[in-house]
Length: 366
Image (cartoon, rainbow, N blue to C red):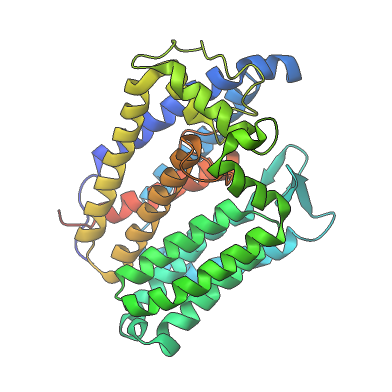
């Protein structure tokens, strides 16, 4: 292992903290009025987000100083633990139901979402496997099939909750890692058809998913039902214009856009801060992705490179899906905007993942 650099990637740290700060401000702005009505405390969600951010930042700086090769040693164990948690969340009395999904484990106000942590555990395991068996990945039977089989097993368990959004991010990230490792395009084409058939089956098996697809194509066909969120999101984006209505001046957060502090927070941000505010956030994400790719390319070994690619791929896919949903380009999937949206497990996991990326940057040559 080469000597470490004196400091990690400062640009990555600064970009992450800036996005996090914007997120905390927007969570308060988007949720204050609703929180006042529901909890008699306008700072209810902002205080919790600040707590999550504090824990996440502490984890990021701690993990930033943990040699990333440590995760190679623990990769299998972490994956097994996450599989156990995915089983536990399905057990009545253990798993907690929120929003129609049994996706949380916890006691009282404290809870975690195992599917979020499975994303990072799967990235870590795949980075280890691909680094040790890269030559096998060109073989369909010996490399690609077993690898995707494991990924699809985790996806199936996440779908039992059900949580299509988180599962899709995990699968998409895994495919990016496997493709970068050298898997043959012809194999992906064949599996792509199988995947489309399976995805269609998932949609057909649940009526609410069919409604999401049809509402995505024509939200005004059911404007008070399945198309409601997309329409209200578009109503947020339009009035924002170039400069926005002003921080705290959103109209859609007053009961029109359900829980605006979570999946659709970018719509509120664009309404209040306009095109310039939305473009600034996208620019910051672009900088974050740029630094991540540079770290991956400069990593001193395959494990570090694949691990960095997995983390930055997870961020990129999540951002693309969330922005796609908010702008009406994709069906509603329930994906948070990294570092911006309200959420405990997702925010903590994202900051911890960036901590791993920062540690790799201390060894990378770029």
